[in-house]
Amino acid sequence: MFDFYKKLLENYILNITYSGIPEILQKAMRYSLELPGKRLRGVLLLASYAMLGKEINQALPFAAAIEMIHTYSLIHDDLPSMDNDDLRRGKPSNHKVFGEGMAILAGDSLLNYAHEIMLDFCVKNKQFHFLKAAHVISKYAGASGMIAGQAIDISTTTDTKDAETLRYIHQHKTADMIIASVMGGLFIAEANDKQLNAGKEYAYHLGCAFQIIDDILDATGESEIIGKSIGKDCMQNKLTWVSMFGVKQARLAAEMHTKQACSAILGAFANGEFLIEIAKKFLDRLR
Ligand code: GRG
Image (tube, rainbow, N blue to C red; front, side):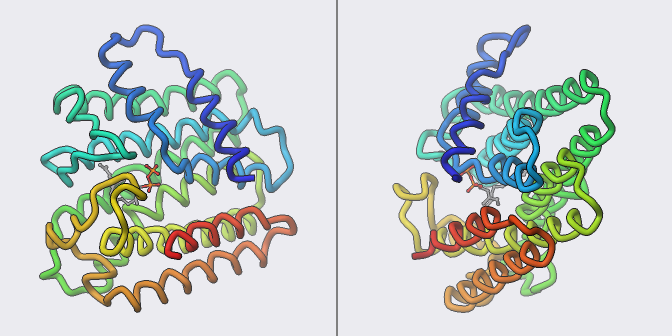
């Protein structure tokens, strides 16, 4: 099922048109967007939408948009002035191929174009629930969401031994984009308040589990398998679950968040098996 949605989304992404965009900028945008990512956020948006049984085509522009926003954040995160990483999705980072200036512009363009695609769809369809989806995605990706998390992340080191700061970073840097994806899908499907709250809770816990798993893989994984440099958190003196509590506690925390994510779905949706399967699939990355 995951692969089915992933393929649908990737096909849609490959068919995005870039008219009016200079060729060099297009190339830089498409380079990172089309490299093989897990597509977790886009698939989550589609799956959350489909859980309420509607026509999937309506959700595809939003799923592509969330992947474009996610890709911009990765391009900017890899820049020398941020996380300074040469490898992403198993290939040289955007700035290694196109230079720093063009990588910044490719990131800016993906972010802006994502909003253009969503708003274009809203204008054409004139329905308020589409606008609500665009709004929730914009908000959770923005200055009080993912960017807030990144801002605190780059200004915090292991010297800050504060669990609340760590939780804040994880909630915003990682979980907010997962929340945007799930709530985006639910808004398009016109979910009710109970379903929206349960979806948000699921996404928050899945996001926390996902980030803790990412921290563990950074400390213990293999670069060829996960497609990015490893051991960087330790080298850069980063505050992570592993640096603060060790690998064993981090594993337990990832398991606990996965359980909480699954219970949120069980309590609110009759056919939420696929969202539960997704949460378990990501925990399985540790095996
Ligand atoms: C630059 C505003 C700004 C934000 C950057 C995404 C991000 C925020 C930083 C990347 C570093 C990091 C560890 C972020 C946490 C989220 C995360 C694990 C992102 C990587 O997502 P995956 O593993 O990537 O889903 P793929 O390539 O599979 O899409």
